[in-house]
Length: 356
Ligand SMILES: Nc1ncnc2c1ncn2[C@@H]1O[C@H](COP(=O)(O)OP(=O)(O)O)[C@@H](O)[C@H]1O
Ligand SMILES: [Mg+2]
Image 1 (cartoon, helix red, strand yellow):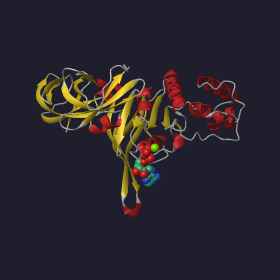
Image 2 (cartoon, protein in one colour):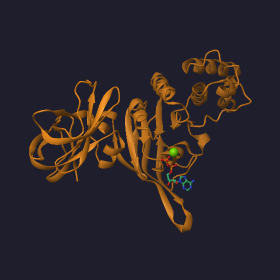
Image 3 (spheres, protein in one colour):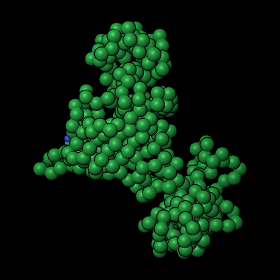
């Protein structure tokens, strides 16, 4: 299997909508996915993830723009003329065929001898952890096992690009976490280029080399999970990925690649900040703040909820806004009761700055 680069250039898909209007489902997407890279399209329902993926697979033709796989422009090629394979949310297995027959199905249409096909099916079944289940019917398998069959069936044709459209949405939470690790392991073992679509941010974080955050047909940000989480480029990204607090502040001065800002009368150094001046927002994750008894921004505790691994504390800022603070590994002796006064401190390495 030879990993290929995938390139989307000015990709647009417009659908007709009721009343003679139109939907710009995908709106000028530019992206290069490197050979062997796993990239996730992440965003809310309706933002254009599936449409983008279906254009890469050839199930949907672009309104304009181009798709390259390797150096080949495949924009107007039929699905069977491209070397892609897709794994869907509904496993789409053939119920009347055995697991083996399902896995080997795609090889029927390829120039592969019976013996070669048998060997490939065996090898792939072992890779995805389906040894010994070949003679069963899909109906005799668990949801997780059925999804492995769907994955094996996609891999057996040795595609250049593997596509996933929310493949784990039908599984329960525990199995979903397990299967995402399995998918990542298989993708890395094969070194195959993969595009994964999900609306689940933790899935995207766990699986991806890079995440593409989409909103209304457009790319909001492309970056590693760390970049997306710690340095969100827009409020939308900050809000979509995990919990986040926005604190009003004023930029005092630039300091190298960072800035000094003032929030509620206190000066805070932001290690890495975009070029901004005047009023801005500090972007702070709940786990990057803590409550102190003596120093910091004066706040009033509104509520605290014990979550086992953390205590989630809501506090009110001097301007009346509320923010959330996580205290991990909470000590139950250290209680923050509603109405209590405390002081909010920020971890200056974990704060980020965005325009208002
Ligand atoms: N075949 C279609 N005809 C008309 N509109 C469509 C079609 N497919 C998708 N859309 C619209 O395009 C937008 C993007 O849809 P989709 O790509 O399925 O989003 P996502 O996968 O991110 O939930 C939505 O507004 C959706 O209603
Ligand atoms: Mg979708």
